[in-house]
Amino acid sequence: MLEIIAIVLYIILSCSGLCFMKADAAGGTGIKILSFYIGIKMLIGMLCYGISFIIYAFVISRTQISIMIPLLAAVNSCIIVFAGWLLFGESINMGQGIGISVVVAGTLIIGFFSRG
Figure 1 (cartoon, rainbow, N blue to C red):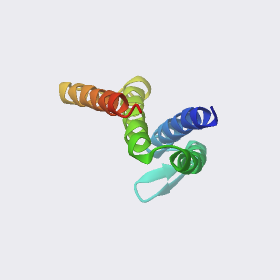
Figure 2: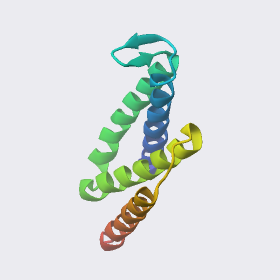
Figure 3: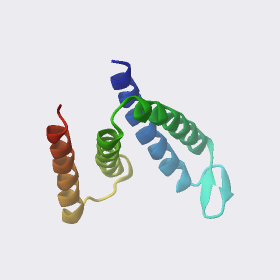
């Protein structure tokens, strides 16, 4: 049960962290470093992403790594593509849609054949 809670927290924190960083990097608030901005959203995003990395280390230490890493990568990728469309108005083209479908299918195949 603790592993499931940690997985959900990891997904929430890593995806929200990336969205916060994206929102601030291009948004133009805060201090400009190189070609992006560091403001409060960027700092919140870094904090969320940093905490998610600690949780990620916990999750992979307590689960089967050959299943968990592909699963988490697939779930995060799908959520981020959807968040990009919903929050930032990014388009999803046919290639991305097919790619997401392949990722979901691959994750289901991994899960199906990993039952033991």
